[in-house]
Image (cartoon, rainbow, N blue to C red; front, side, top):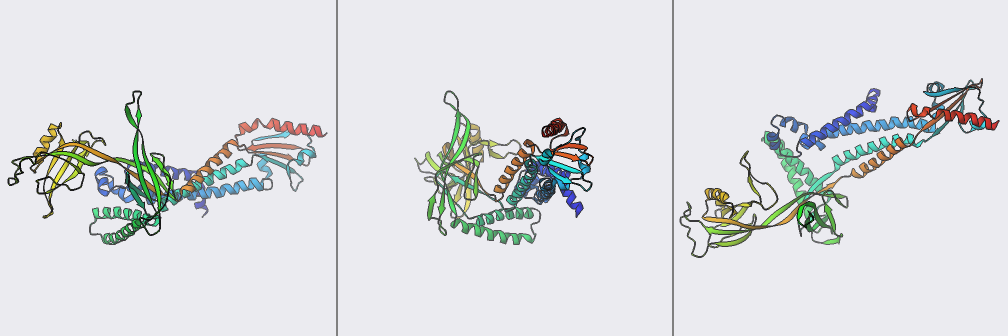
Length: 518
């Protein structure tokens, strides 16, 4: 047991654990977190197995990270205990616990010749008399510096303990909202169920990726269904709602008043309490509060962080014309005057064209259409409306099947139209005219029960540092032998070179005090 305690009390052990946590943090920064297994297989073809096996895909909640943090906490607790044993002796029992050999061994010391100390000087000191009538006089200054080191280590313990508590009991939940929406927030118990369901689902997908017949999958599926049921019911009985009253973006302006870069993303929110058991029975409403990136808000036990900001393109204006001689559509003949048409439709919502027998829907909209040269994948290169395009799909509602698709681009994109014409199988030509959007934000809602403990630990750590480095602790020792010979010594938490400069002052004080008494 002593070997284990000495191991954890060693500063080398603490440094090792700190370096290990730093290494894990670097790995957690380099490796994207909480993705699907296929992302790690494609992104790290030679390392995906140890990444998944060691839990590096969710580094900060992996057994390795939590275990290392726990061991570092244990090391800090043992250091606090040993430091308290040392400090308590200096605070309460310093004179009785010191040996005369320790005093003689002090580097800053001197034997006084021709000096007889008066009783008035000795009375200012605590005195301990040995069996041979040798007297040891002691006085100390700046005892708070001794407590500083203890407080510093105690602060570290609280920081580590609060971090562990947050990792084990803390939860996070993303909240997506548009302007004018009210998003229900369920109770903490329900959020825990959703958080657990999300983790289980991700683990189940990983297992299914490599072992589709694993019997654990059925157990996990049943557990996930129960958790989803708890979450669904919890949304109908929320604790409160978040109302997204206003979303806007501020820009920098130059001297001429022209907008330049983005200054801040802003969301004006209200928190609305809900009576127990009812989704619509709203009670107390908070005042409006503005949340920005790096400026979080708190409500009840939750913290809200602005995590993402998107333009949600909702309404698309298109012109549509008839295209003859499309294979498979020989029987479709629109009436004279039906085309061209101008329409405004919503993304992902079905719409109809006058004279066309099937339903249509914009299945995908690209506000800044690009094609990757590496793998021919289509993606948005920005959030701005620079190079818009969309895929329009026609459905037969009765047969419940797709009957064709086509593309829509702006009139100026002739090359894109050639691509669209070559890939279409509908007798319609769509031309993009304009699009309107609304802002959509994602807030990260988190509950961290360890946060107050971490903040208290940070305060104690800083306070302990100030006491340790800005308060000087000094001990004055006087040994008076029965033959009247005198030995003096000084010790401090500062270097011996600094305390040596104070020895002449100490000696002069003793000599002058004796002269005045005489």
